[in-house]
Amino acid sequence: MTVTESPELNGALERESAQRLATVSNRLDALRRLLESGADRVDDTFLAPGHRLLERSGERLGLSTMHTVVALVGATGSGKSSLFNALSGLELSAVGVRRPTTSLPHACIWGPDGAKELLDWLSIAARNQVVRESVLDGDEQAELRGLVLLDLPDHDSTNVTHRLEVDRMIGLVDLLVWVLDPQKYADAAIHQRYLREMANHEQATVVLLNQVDTLEPADVGACLQDVRRLLHEDGLGEVALLPVSARTGAGLDDVRKLFAAAIAERRTAVDRISADLDRVSVALASLSGPPVPEEVDRANQNAIVDDLAQAAGIPALAEEVHGSYLWRAGRYTGWTFARLVGRLRPDPRSAAEREHGNGRAGASGGVVVPRAIGRAEVDGALRGLSDRLTETMPPAWHPTVSRATRVHADAVQPALDLVLSDTDLGLDQRPGWWRAMWLAQWLLALVAVAGGADLIVNAVQPHLLAAVPAMLRVILPAALLGGGLLLGVLLALITRSMVRSGARRAQARVVQRLREGVVAAVREYVVGPIRGELTAYATAQDAYQVLTRR
Image (cartoon, rainbow, N blue to C red; front, side, top):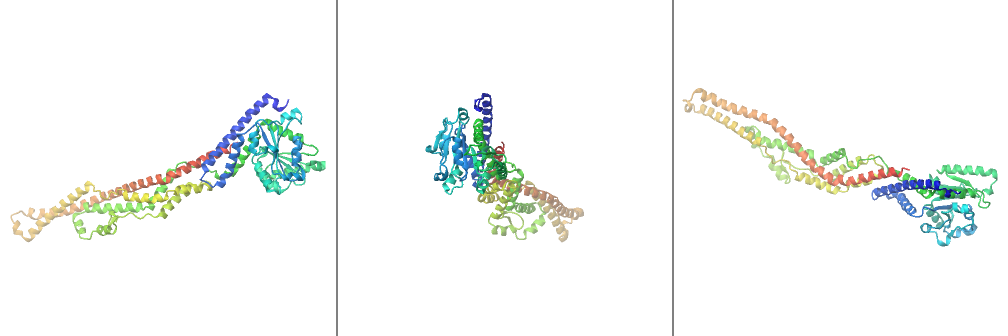
């Protein structure tokens, strides 16, 4: 009974094949998500291998999985075409000097049903296709049903179209059979250009040492050992290596059995795609990095708000508001006589308001004037945020985060200007207790003035108040004068601490209002665009984890 005639084994193989196909499909989907996340974000050179594999693999899985495409690849003189003829049992490929005249592969198909679309996808011309009939005995014919055997042009041909065709087909077939010969098996061209590129593709690669009939029997083992050494260096240490002879037929039964096993397991195409996914995952490793939050975290938001607030001069502006509060409160709550003397000096606001038409009534020295916001300062703050966000990211993702951070940089500066110009600084507010203190100070001043006036009258015209008792004529006016002055000074000192506390609160309110405006600008013009890039990065990292899961 052949392998394909065991129902139990076939059922197990079907289940294993379905499981492996599901795994590969998940990995391909992860690759698709990773490529979509990186599109227009990272350099296309990083993504190009993934796009090529995704296109090829998707097309291959959509075609016949009942067929296994095996390609014979070799150098000129390796006996590849003779081996193809010997394996197929037919004279299908020209050998010798005539072979290089064509750049098209030949195909021998065992069991053509359902293979047409696959052959069309491989671009195998109909004239170069032959269906294998019953030259072999029935059991071997059944075992090889589903095999598509290709004879490719020589990979070292002087005709560039031959080499291009080989390169194209290498990326499409399910199983690559490299045909070496004893004279040129160590040729750097095949090892450096091809075999090393197939590193970790052991399940999708077979190496045949052909023409062993030209060696002494004692030399065959040494030659195979040296080939194995070279394959180890190529990263193909576990690949199947068989000695064969197309002329004598030695080893060909082992090759057919290997093909039959690959067909019976129905996993070669999936194995090839899986190996290609492994290779692409290595190529895409530069896009992989530690996870980062999909939102700009609170610490970074606070940092960029602090930086932009500094760039807008909010701390200095708040200090001006603090000084403005002290200056304005002093005009209401200060000692009346000190305020009257102060009014004799020029009002500093008048000159300042004439100089700064956009200023607002403010501190001593003039008005509260928002500083001009420099673009360089804004760019520096945004660059600092980008550097912090990408600190743990792979370098490939730095440009996209940096672009997202600065994509609306031109809008940030006007938004900050608007915050400074439209935010109520509270410069027109006059607390009710200011007026109460103002009234109290004036009453005390009037009492002091009345007492002083009585003392002056008593001193200048004592006869006018001769009828008034001495206590009322001297002591009471003096008490009124002294009390009014002393209480006015004490009240001014008491209210000074209240004024300072109020100034600090006014400063804090202004800082809070201005920061709220900066926060709104940051969320609209900075955090929003970055969120999309962080989400794309997180999606790519999740996809990469699935991609590398076998």
